[in-house]
Length: 203
Image (cartoon, rainbow, N blue to C red; front, side):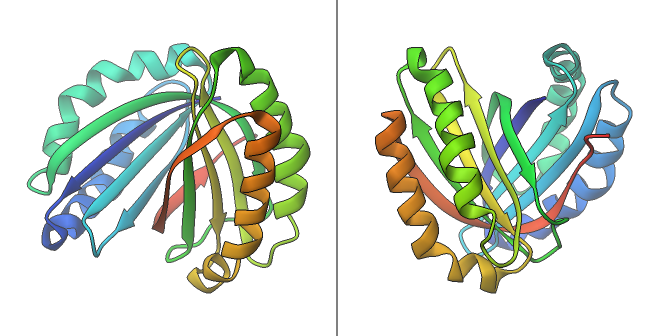
């Protein structure tokens, strides 16, 4: 599958209005597009950060949805968003243990690697990260998104509640360190966000 990730920052006091807009009009708009397989909305209400991720059956389906979403994105995020960035990825690994819940937590690590090592990064994630994090209490998803051409990636672990997210920090840090060394990649960013909504269909 393929993913479009929209990252917006703005006034924390206006974030809830943007969340309501994405959960109503935004989701309806996505569901009308061919090849749509699901979406997630994640937030940092204290700092004013919003991440909206949509999942697509093929790269073509994602690309075909770009024009309509580009036209409507500004209106959906107003008046919250002061900055907006968009990134596209291949969903190289997706492993679900439980269904996510509203109020859960997402930890996302942004990575850089030599594009020639993309397959090594994917293989390392499957062999090292997935089996090591699967037993963690409260785990819902673990996934790896990559941009093979640019050598960029996002590794995510999503938990059903914030307590499980917090309790996992030391264990996931150890796995992250091991995987980074094996795959020769650099972790360049790390953040935790609240799960507002998350649902992806693989059937």
